Image (cartoon, rainbow, N blue to C red; front, top):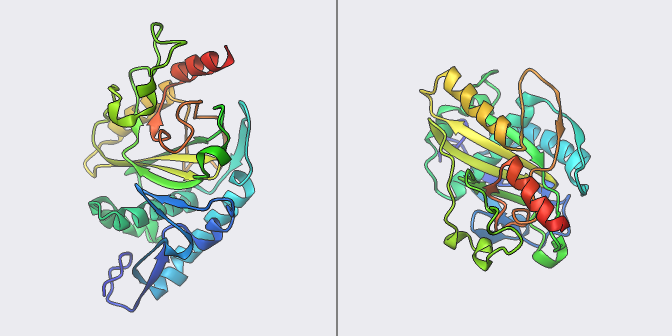
Length: 280
């Protein structure tokens, strides 16, 4: 069978969608989310990776990711906490792309982008400008504790919705409608970025990573304009290969923290409105 990473015909082994070492950091999580499905323990695997890749470069990435999550994101943060986050852009980005690629294969999605960029994930290519990664903190400001709503600290959600139209406006503030909590009934204006192939939201404990995968034909100027729009209106911070430290802040509010709505990316003004509503 052909390995999904090196594309060589080799003996195939099972690859964990999330590394076992990361799963073990969250023993309170009875279930882990893969798209719309839930798996438990060692059932979160896919059998299409050769032993060399699995125990070699992918294991190195998993060790790096586990150390990063253990250092920064196992702990729970509160309020408007801001943390100083040290990272190696090459290692972190490759690891996050590997996690997303794993889930994409499990979900049988179109993996053209990953097949075109496997050399970067495998460390055979030093630079890649066909993706952007934004980061922030998932902090629970809702009235419902995690233990009540269910511990959902590891997930990958594809095509998160970048909201342009406010969830609340001056007419609804103070009297939210029940359908606010039902994604299928929500009539929201979604931002569409030019040349966006796909996107994914990755939750790792108290961290949220928003990943944009760009089409190969995107020009640098268009990518930069898309990134600048995100930075101008949304609370996420852009990770950069020219930096090794960034300050991360809260990117969730009371109505998009728990897993059913966490894939709704809201703007800074709307976060302020929701925070004000909660305080009143």
